[in-house]
Length: 610
Image (cartoon, rainbow, N blue to C red; front, side, top):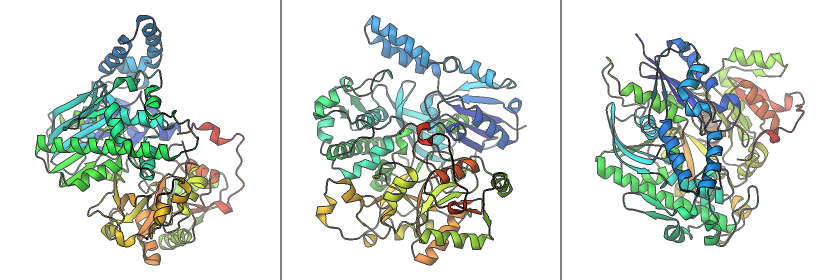
């Protein structure tokens, strides 16, 4: 008899559902992809329905539903914040907090039974950071590894060090609220004028434009860092109630400058603050990694939690050589906890199947979401009389590669959608990395976002060491490394040190300038020979024609919009932007051949700035 386990994460941000059947990962997806609400926090009923469909079961076939946190502990922490304040103010805040804690979050069991009325199985609750640790270790290729989880906060915990051996994870030490690396980074994100729980990656992308000249003053006043990677935050600089700005006025007093307002101009101060914050987080993550090594003596490390998406810090950990190898959960944020919760339950029950050596990545390249057949895409296109072209595979790959070589931008839609925030070739926008204008063009005309934002290179896996300073696969775009010296171009030092953002953006730094950041770094993705994908075939053809085994790969979406899920999402994204062509389940859909696109309202008004 099979055992079907559904994992759920929701109510904070980036809700998701995952399903495993007899320990095998079947499906995992974020609710935002269906609802089209970025980082949707709501109960993931659409994701659950998809997971059940992919598994070929109904809700009554579910044996266990596992929730990714213990909600009573999380509420206990929130209420403790209220108690710190004077009585009248606390009472007013308490009412607001209860408004946010909907009946579903207060009583998730009741909501689950309301939403899934035919479910008759058990409901279990797993601690938030244990879900993170499980999502990191169990799908990894390691049978034994140190595990670190670092995020904002889950219940009372903000980071952990654990040791995974076979099917068991042993917690070694943890750090508790309010001392949080994730909340510290989010506060800096807010101070720099970006959106919390969405714009943290912008701080990481902005950092190379600056110098970390404020790191000492930050460590003297805002954050203390200890040798084991634990920290202490000066609480006068923060408000974690969720009802007021996360940064207090003390930040402005310290730096003698007001918080940057969203969408306003960025200047040298913002570059330098971003560089300083990023350097501090890298220092902390290195220290936590060293402590994990000390505590476990393991050769391998697994990472999860929201800070695990800081691929610059991940690259520094790998480069430091503390561990033989590092594996990062590609959905390291809260979405991945839906999978971690399910895996935690499965691996902590007595089952007949004997634990076997993994020695392989069990995440299925993170291709765990919905897919569409070629016939389904044809049905969609013909329903609306949208022109398309069908060629044999070899001819279509040649045509797409030729379009890229000519400077065209391609929306690639191939197979099952990725789980997590990184587009990995299933829902990607791809282009020519040799074109020095491409970064600015794709940011402004395709993504409609800030011009400083870097793009990631995707590369044939066997060629990676010939272009980048790394000697192993990195299939999840989870590590930043540097382009090797012989691929770089000499640059005038005056231009490098210019405080003008646009001067520095327009520099051709390497043979693949569009994916080379200002410090010669890049967030790489390697593409293996197997399984064969359209992305792999395009890369091979482009390499044959140009002697460059690299393409630009960015997520298939517009600014503040979730990654596309369906053929309709993909088509709409192309028509709203300057994407030249869709390559969708082997079909070629060129924008220039499409009927004029009309929308009654301005679609940009639908999405909040990220």
